[in-house]
Image (cartoon, rainbow, N blue to C red; front, top):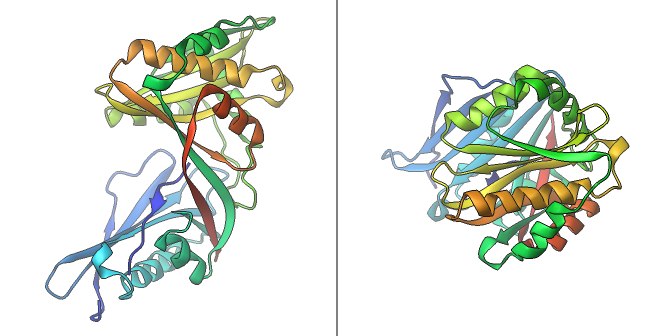
Length: 304
């Protein structure tokens, strides 16, 4: 999902320097502001992501960070005003931001007109503590009418169209009151997403469930691993098409993803995931596989 917002708030109004990302992404472009004191000391920053793909042109995503020694001095407010003004000028309808539950960022957003629209649970699987035998057992269970496949990086050409079509499995993901829009996926976007992961030096691993009747992708589970294979991997999404749900395919794919990660990347220490609190099926899968909650976060939204 979005980066955590860490907000801290100088008697002297900060100077803001506006920046623009020189290389827009395939689905968004970014604006940024750097806040500094009268002596040039960095105080904080704001990043505004403006989505450009069909179905999300109304949306902007905000991340603000202010140095903890500058709290309650108006730095965060100045950064927020600049970002919101830019989003409104660009014709955006909504700005979303995320903060850890009970944090200064949580209170900052709530006090400035943002409303809570989504509650999230972040969890981590400690690979050294994972029951690999049980996970392997779950990954090897037979599912009549289905089989698993996997690939690294870009989807194989023969599955590209089917995989892009399967992304609609995310359309009804619980988002509660978030004005997230509908993400429109096609082959070009699937390829661009994989290429973006590779460009920053990480590795994208995908496990997919195929319908044996026609070989089409009916579900997928994505995992991104640091390029050096060390530290924590990050689950990017696990989803099953509505017409194939209720058969255990989500658990099957995620168990296989964990098994492969343990086998191929012995330097990994954990796997991270975040789930909407209302997504009870996936919360249950994570609990069964051994993921332990680390913290909760709140998604906020401001209407423009």
